[in-house]
Amino acid sequence: MVLSVAAIIFLGLAMIGAGINIAAAIIARPPGGVPALPGWPPITVLKPLHGGEPALAANLQSLFGQDYPGAVQIIFGTRNADDCALGVVAAMRVAFPDADIDIVVSDRRCGANNKLSNLANMDAVGRHPIVIIADSDVAWAPDTLRRLAIAVAEPGVGLASCLHIGRGDAGFWSQLAAMDISYRFMPSVLMGVALGMAKPALGPTMAFRRDTLNRIGGFAAFADVLADDYQIGRAVRALGLRSVISTFYITHGCAESSLRGLIAHEMRWTVTIFRIDPLGFAGSVVVHTLPLALIGAALAGFSTAGLAVLAAALGSRIVVKLRMDAASGAVSGALILLPLRDLLSFALFCATFFVHKVYWRGSQFRVTRDGRLQSR
Image 1 (cartoon, rainbow, N blue to C red):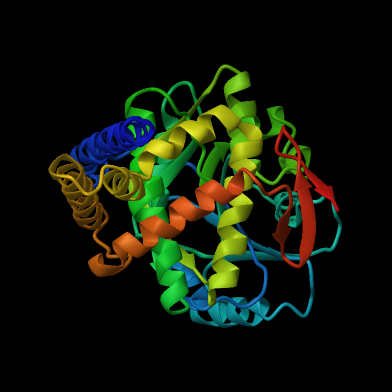
Image 2 (cartoon, rainbow, N blue to C red):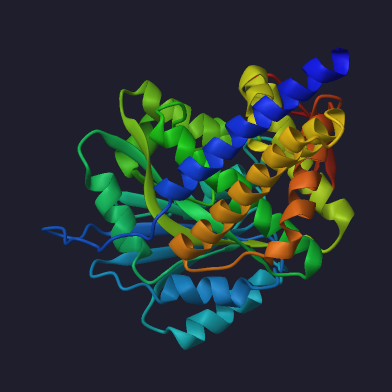
């Protein structure tokens, strides 16, 4: 009887997850056309750097290749004058001599989060009324600045971010990391936004009006938090403004070259999410559709009903993968790897409840309930 009840629970959760996958697949679609604004506002793009990444040159190329009619100031920032990423920037300056480029090198720290300290240092030389953060591991389509300018021009919008699709830049493990972004995280974002249950701010690319950024205290106000995108979004909404997801896709490069690196990276984020919202994180178990169905089918003795749910779960995962590939115009990983990726995601989800520390760029931290970093 105990096994029967457990089987029903797992199979029921798997069916809910399958429904979420199908609904996300229906919602996912390619971006529409880009309307024109009466005037295109000047934009400052902040590009924080940290070492050489596998596709850094291509990522920066996509920034310089923007089809934007207005003025664009590009600020690169790093903490170290010998950062090898500066060599790539130097090459870009040669290739794009007419670009408006500033470089900030400063080791001044505002808190434990080096990226936010870097952004605070960079923004001190920013000149324009629209400010956009672009992580060094992202690549943009040529119309990205246009779409972000349109998003923040909407009345009542204080912050705009965008969907992203994963791209493996360092072999097999980075491909698995990319698949988690594309086929688990993004469908969950689509559903959360559609149901009004989530108001995410997605950190790889975010756009603000400068007055909004100043009102929330600038980047320095968030230099002690790991989930800075979450806290920045919450601060913007506290002003009575909206944080929105503009439904087009940027590419988020993944550079995990080993299983250990992948686990460390993903555990850092699952632990952070759990510490900030433990009930919400626990409820997200339903997005682990295939592992739940596999456990339920095993508990049911691989009965006809159990196998039917397992088939439905697998089918829903295939559908959402194919749909995300079509909507984004990119393929993050091979279909045959999807079950492996799903099992790994579920294992990390379960492990999160027993982990109390994270590793980030060579240092160990404890994440507090409000997402702040405390050195171990």
